[in-house]
Length: 145
Image (cartoon, rainbow, N blue to C red):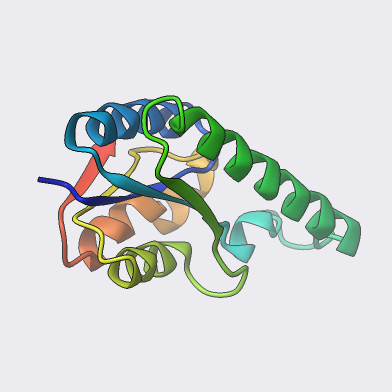
């Protein structure tokens, strides 16, 4: 039923649960899995006016962290399904739109992501990526808690 699955990860508890659910689905259906990770720059910006903006070093550290997180998720999924690859999403733009676009490009049958991400405060203010993916997607979306 699901030939290709896109899994979005962000290091949150719900994303870990989404990873395990994706692994089970991939094993059951023999699905290929594309793991994606991205962060909106707004999530790196301070919520308090006048607070310092992120430094170049913070951006580099964040990119290194993103690569490690993606690599870890891909490795873990290979325990369930060997046909797994990872993709870092561009830093500019809205991550929800990029997840949906990655699913279109991959011709995925399903998008899987955690219901709540790492920045729950930001989600309350701006609406989380999961909500946006559900609104933007033209294919089934599985939110995992």
